[in-house]
Image (cartoon, rainbow, N blue to C red; front, side):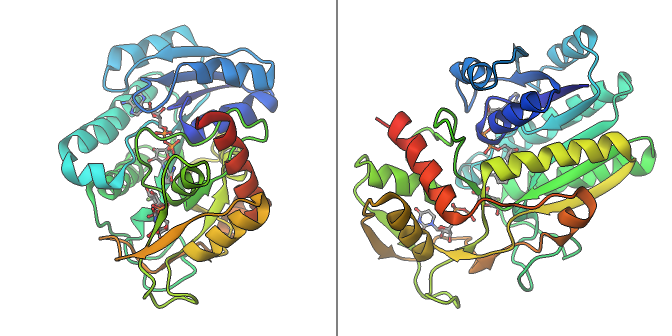
Length: 333
Ligand code: NAD
Ligand code: UFG
């Protein structure tokens, strides 16, 4: 069984390649390396002791997608490739719409042509906009607050329309909550370019001394300690969710959305404390004003993924902190 992984050298894609290879799947990766490094290819091979084909290419180039489908018999696709920085998407929306949407249209057109109609798509909890309540269920109303989120929701709509037009498709829309952590080898993890936007990479860079202190964005939310609450999920658990979703799309036709989260919310200060406890390293922080566009609380009801995919997250917050730190020590010098 061969799986094409778009964006397979990125943070979540690389962990998913490891899980796929360890489970005996044949893997083919396409990535343009806009937000990842070529060395990840060899790292995945060394972790798994398995080989796979890597194409350095862009989903905006339909010829390279065509070439991949001509050269390989692809059974299903896991589609991670996309630009993901919320703030950047506000400054350069056209690039985000073009990259994420045109890339997906190109991919689906080639898949259709080659009669490969099994797709797992990286959506995001951002499609819930400002949720009416928590925990969030898959049938909650969908809306977005920034161009990045809009690309995710538009792609979900495109994929739902695709299924309506042709019931041979099987599509899983995976709505991730907040992935953190890293592979236990400490060799792959989240290594953003420049100053991180997300909480855990910022914390690890403060802990290692690259950044002076964490700015905690707001302590006056209606949460247990006033700081923002999110559903942090270990990237290895998240990756395992993709294997379950691939099994599902291989077996059954349809289009289904699934929350991939733990169901537990932690505040920013809970995460700082958990990090300090599991690593023994102090994290300096100061309270700052709220960040524009942030919501108070966001956490999943993951029941549907448990019932329909047979998946649930098992790794706890201490493990997430410990693995993030091990990766940082090896990689952020
Ligand atoms: P990432 O940036 O580490 O990985 C994405 C990969 O896609 C990168 O390696 C990048 O080089 C590649 N890529 C981007 N555009 C491409 C193109 N046109 N052609 C070929 N390759 C391209 O991001 P990630 O954190 O691993 O996220 C993977 C997916 O999950 C993304 O679609 C992202 O939007 C989504 N997602 C991520 C999070 C998160 O917090 N990390 C949350 C929700 C959803
Ligand atoms: N935070 C800080 N200081 C920082 C960074 C973040 O206090 O330096 C806070 C935020 O205010 C928020 C929490 O930490 O309360 C988490 O923030 P992140 O930026 O790590 O994550 P978000 O929940 O804002 O967004 C992430 C991804 C989005 C995705 C969303 C889905 O960045 O792409 O999760 O749930 F859509």
